[in-house]
Length: 319
Image (cartoon, rainbow, N blue to C red; front, side, top):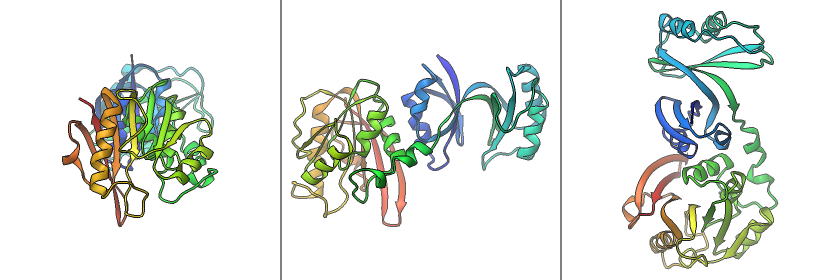
């Protein structure tokens, strides 16, 4: 196990930290920062709501004498050129400026400073009344997610979930390489694509034949079928994870008599195909926490998309 320090996105108060469960166990944290015990560094690259992954070197109170003591104790000798970077979270109580702190740290590390192309990067995160210090291992780029913008896919349909959020939903399910993830409302296949990219096996269903044909264009080798989410052609207890974005409006293609009935039947079917102890991540515009049946509700998150749409995200465990 390795102890890693994560600089988290500030776009949502709870999702970035919750996402870390797919790579390790969070042992400490504050606003936009977390420390986790992880099996490997490589797995951290799958995260979508973290900015930087670091080797955790130590922490202290957010004041200069405490930071000086920490750096003196660490007695860092850089293995090549280095840079020192500082991130001050909005609730940081340390009055010293970012620029001052970067010079302060740089003067206490032995080696040659190179701000443009350093061989090593040391980062200090000041969050609230605490400082977290680490050496950068992975910078998680948004570029690859932007490149997978739904508009660039062979088949596009409005209202789809963007890749970074779809990846976060996949990560909340804790699906691992080689395991099976199913999306019963797969639409154009955005969630399935992100699951495939973390090494999962994928399968999907949708009641709308046009969506299934489009999904096959986007993911030619995926197993995608035309099926009602209340009657999916997958064996009971066969699935390691379910991640899906439930239909939002009456204009969607549904076979049930009402949206309430659709939700109830679909959740029952998700419970049937899921293995015991495994997770379903359900995204919907309604708060249906009181309708999860025999599932155990592990997490609930809300994220506002625009004036008329708030996503509710439930992380459920099959008992």
